Length: 324
Ligand code: SAM
Ligand code: SF4
Image 1 (cartoon, rainbow, N blue to C red):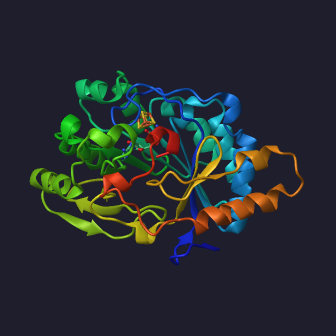
Image 2 (cartoon, protein in one colour):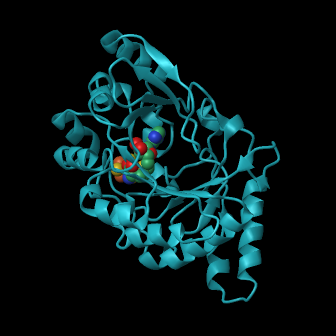
């Protein structure tokens, strides 16, 4: 078991497999991104090697993210590789949903345990304004195809300037389909630094105005800090990840692995522990050296993020480079 300096058990790793994306979300990578050469990215074999060492140390849950994970060729294969790794309990994915429909059967066959689909509005014009692309119909089709076949959560980020009016409509997905709809408070990272977060308390108030009082639905989802509520007559739940107004660092259980092979102890700070050189230097004791680096990243985990004091945030990279 991996325990950090503050007594937290680290059992979850988010893996970014690419920094590329087929959308241009305003709060994430509005102008695209300088491309990292493919040779700088960890191969799936290298990622699986790191996960094997992490699983040996007690990390049993892995989430594949990006960038957009499904734009990297062969991403379904990585799901299979991780699912076959001893000690790996759970493999999930976060995607913008554009390519999910066409990969769904492969992902189900590979054993994907759950999927988070990011969608910030049900209005076509607003979707285009947020993402720069006209893909709302494809994302909705993916959601409908996936719902009921595996656990699905819709992740929604609400910004004052862009989609302040979106929560009520987004909640209808949880009313009509077996999916949870979760609101994530915008964090001041990269392109989001100039945008205003809408506090989750006000999102909840607006949803209750429209759909009536909600009740607490205890039991989160194991890996994350979401809290859930139920509304009368809804099939799925409404969840809240209050990164800004409900600091949940005391329960943090995660490390991040970037696409270029750096372990990130915390989203808010620029510190990383590089693994790529070790993975590629041909020395014989790679397993133990990678495990030592994983332990080092756990030792470096700070007590808490400092997003509420923006001047102290040292992470300069966009979310897409970090693996949100
Ligand atoms: N492309 C995939 C997607 O959009 O689901 C995976 C990567 S994306 C960086 C992961 C999640 O991070 C998305 O749900 C996105 O909305 C969220 N995100 C991006 N920038 C954010 C920010 N500044 N604050 C909070 N969430 C953010
Ligand atoms: Fe792409 Fe996801 Fe970032 Fe949107 S939030 S630009 S879909 S990586």
